[in-house]
Structures are given as structure tokens and as C-alpha cells.
Length: 100
Image (cartoon, rainbow, N blue to C red):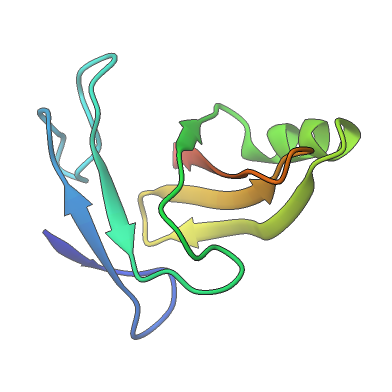
């Protein structure tokens, strides 16, 4: 399922492995669904993305722990928010918060 991305001209393709609601969000606890967007600097490769309840609070904790925010909190259509950070070992990780 192709969806409009966070910016005009950016396509976001959903990948489903479990049941979803009308917004394309997973309805089963522990299920894996997701999506793909064309990567560009600073995030060039696929990354593991972690679901968080409060993305802003998570970014504060990441900075306190020595991580570096690479892509700040960004809205993804009307689904939620994403951000990317680099941890203290140089790994790039994504964060996801469902829009409530």
C-alpha cells in the first residue's frame, strides 16, 4: 500500500504481516508491520525502529545517554511521528510514536 510521505513527493510503502486498523496500524500485540521510504543522508540503510509512547521524552533520554539525534521528530502523514538517532556505538536506530 503506497501512502503519501511526510513531505510532498515522498512515497511511503506499507509492509503488512498482521491485521491492521483503518489507518494501517497493527491491531495485534507483538505483531510486526512497517513500511519503507527511500533513504537518504543521514539514514542510508534500513534500520530497526522502536515503538515509544512519548517520542519527545525518548529523545531527551537518548541525548542524556550520549546519543545524537540525526532526524528530529517528524510527522508521518496522519499516522504518527518518527525520529532517528545514532547511539554511542555508532548504530542508527529509528523511533516511532503512534498519533493518538
